[in-house]
Length: 142
Image (cartoon, rainbow, N blue to C red):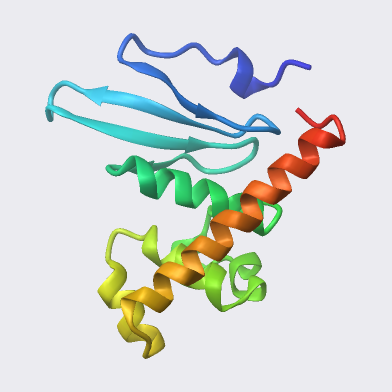
């Protein structure tokens, strides 16, 4: 099966950083004008989202799998995607961490928790996403 993402040609300064099931991946882009590297989340039908930190791009991908996908388009108009809200406290905390206006201390303050608790929330999301991807692969999903 070839999708638009699979057949996409990359710029000379782009490469696949991480590749996941269901044509989800993170693309590493060198920004020569800014002398930095950025990481773009790609999934079928999803708005391209860029991160300066590869760990945040991976976390965003884990959130995507944790909630069985979501659409980011229009979020600025409507707030957090409903799938994230419905998924629970740990997923929402992880999602907040991927936003450019936050850090772990902001999220901890928002929840009235300490940063260690937020790290546990994130670890739970990452573990579930890993289990979801592993289970999908066991069922032949690529």
